[in-house]
Image (tube, rainbow, N blue to C red; front, side, top):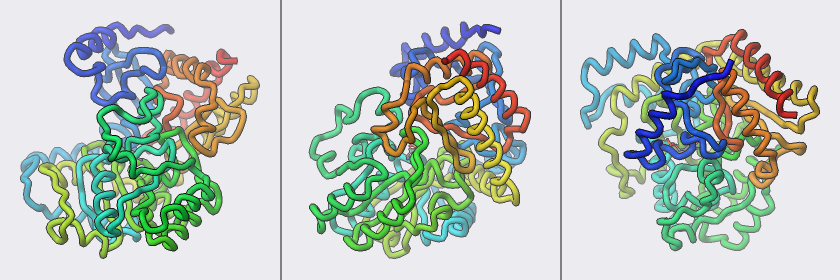
Length: 430
Ligand SMILES: *Cc1c(COP(=O)(O)O)cnc(C)c1O
């Protein structure tokens, strides 16, 4: 059954006239799969419908936030009830403290938290605090890790930036980027060497403790522990950017899975359940530096607005229910195992992995441990697979270097249908 994307094409042409590239975030444009985006009209549970009326099983989930499925009735009821009393006041509300307590209970490394509106803001702000607290200026980040589009973080940033081939965006002053040191993920030796070279200058090390923005890459045994030890030894702050992994790989994040205590954590995506909400938090002595309690300025007109906060709270409540992550993990690993088995049947080099409701795969014959490995993958074959899946009603991230997401609304039937389609498409990718 060939799908028509006529409406989407026409909507995209209109959008191109007034929005750069027709989209409000680059990866949505389908450039890395050499095509044009489908325009979404509505979504429910695990499904999406586009402007031409085509239905899809969704494995993007708004790039992570949609963990309970789209338009969950409990979330909608909460959001409507709260919105009816006003959308934003620019004044404190009790809901914010309730969410703060909820997050702190799930992530004990966080003693105090500040809510912001995007992951980008969380990462920019957390670095300012880290630099102020340590009175140092350099930071270490990993190649292929994405921490939003703040100037000093837009260096070897994976994801959209990687596939567009702009490792350093024009407009980022070279002086700003000069304090950002980059090393390959999973390379503890390289990190140690940087610390030896700049023992007094490194304010913080920031990472996706389980990478999603180079595709899915797991930390090797001992890697996170090693980073924790190095940061403690050189008195640099360890920052886990769990914007993607927080409440996604498990209810306690990567820090809970691996038993590592970062000094600071960034959160986003699931924490807002689809509303613009993100956060940074951590040790009380560090967070006390944030204005107005301390001198480090950071503010936001819409920060912690009641609608976004209530959406996040309800989402956290739903995923905290007993059994939620067991089912989600099972569905996600079934998907990954099924994909692997199809690839094996047709002799296609393929590696895949998952944790909780997050997964990734590469058309690669070797295990992927860092961004350089990821880039060795067969992107042409990925594109063919992506379009085959889309044509048959499965919506996956339109890039070979993005993670995928399953929700609590994905049924066993969704998974078996997806795998049936994937097998057919994989066969065509031989
Ligand atoms: C998505 C993401 C960000 C940026 O969040 P936005 O809300 O898109 O600004 C930062 N860090 C990580 C790890 C992310 O996945």
